[in-house]
Length: 507
Image (cartoon, rainbow, N blue to C red; front, side, top):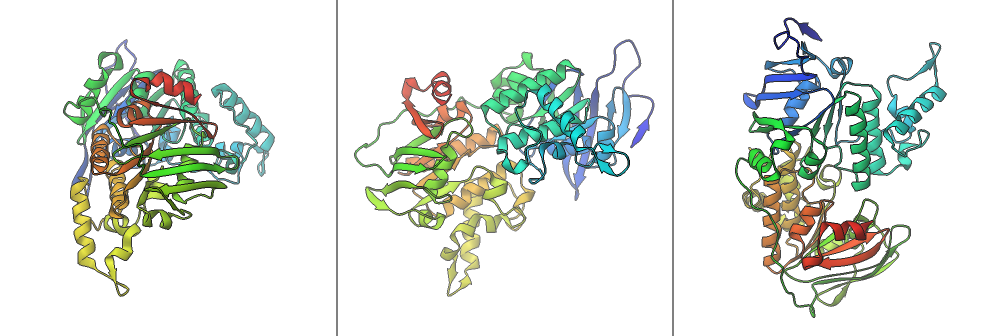
C-alpha cells in the first residue's frame, strides 16, 4: 500500500471526506472500461453509486478494493492519498466489500465463516471456538439478524446466507463498506433488516457505497447519489435534490416513460395452460393457476412463500406430490425440463449465473444449447444454421458483444440476461416462465425486456412472471396471484392491484 502527501484537498478547518476518488481510469486491451470515475463519501452517510450495465461501476469498485490497479487518478481516505496493491491493503485501510456473489463454506458454522482466516486463538495453536461464537452472537444481535452463530451454512436459506456475508464484512469493523447489489438474493423482510443495520452503522460514523438497480431502495436508504454512464462520472449530489425520473434520465441518458400495460380481456373459455392441484410437501399446497394466450400473469410473494418452488415443479426442475397440467385443454405430463420444452414451455431461471448460463462457454453456445437437436443432422452440428440463428437473436435482443464466440461471462449483467432470454426463445415456446427476469439489470435493459415480453404475448403466447419488485409486477401483469406460506392468498387485477393490496396479501 502506497501513501503519498500532500493530501487531495487543501488543509483547513473542514475535515476531509471519509473517502474521495478523483479521475480514476482503467483500460483493458486498449479498450477503456473506466475513463473518469469519481465519488465523495462522507462519514456516516450512504452514497448510492448508480449506472447502467457497462457504466464502469464494477471496474471502479475493483480499483477501490485493490482488485485492479488504476491507470490514473487518485484515491484518498480522510485526506490521505493511498494506492491499494491488493484487497488485503484495502481491508487494512478499513475498506470492505459485500458482493452479490455468495462464497460461504457450507459445512462451517456461521461463526467460523465470519472469522475465516482471522480466527481467535488460545495460545499459538488452538482456535478459540467459544470466543468466536460469543463475538459472532454479539455482532449478529447488534445488527438484529436472527441467525444462530452455531448454525451451519448448509442449513440456512439463501437470504440468511447473504446476511451472514454482510455480517462478515461488518465484523471487520471497517469504516468504509461497499455493498454491491446486497439485496439481490434476499426478500423484503431481510431487506428491511439490512436497512436497519445500515442505519445502525451510519449512526456510528461508517460510510457506505451502495450499488443497486432497485431505485426504490436507493431513495429509501441513501443520503447522496453518484451516477456513472459510459465509463464516466455524470453527476452526484444529495438524493433529496433529485426525483426518480431525474435519476433514470441521468443513468440512461434520456427520459423513460412510466411503464404500465393497458388492461386486456381474454377468452377465459380456452386457457392456454392450466395447473391444477399442485402440491409438494413443506413447499406449497393446492396451487391452481390458469394462463390465457396474450396474457402476462404475475406471481408475487415474500421469499419462501412457495412461488419459485411452484414454477420449478411446474417446469419439471423439482418433484411434486400432486397436480396435473393441461395445455390447450389436453392433459400433458411434465416431469422433466425436456418434457416442458417439447410441450412449448421455457423457463428464465431466478439466478442466471448459477442455473441460467454456462459462464465460460460462448455467447453462441449459451443461446443454442437448449435446442441443439434442431441444429444437428446425422449427429453433426449444422454450423451455418446455428450461426444464423445466433445472429438473429443477438439482433433481436440488442445483445452488446464484440463476438458471439466470446465467453458469456465477459458481458455485462444486462446482456447476460438477454442471452438467457434468447436461449429460452430459441426453443420456440408458447409459454414463458420468468423468475425475476430483470434481477440485476439497469433501467434501460429492463425496459427492453418489458417490450420483449409485450411483443411475445401479442403474438398469441403467454407469460408467467415472478418478481419481487412491486412496481415491476404492477406495471407488467394483467393479473397477479399472491402466494403466502405455500398457498395462494389471493388474486388481484385492475384497480385492485396496488402495492398496499399485494403487501397485505403476501404478509
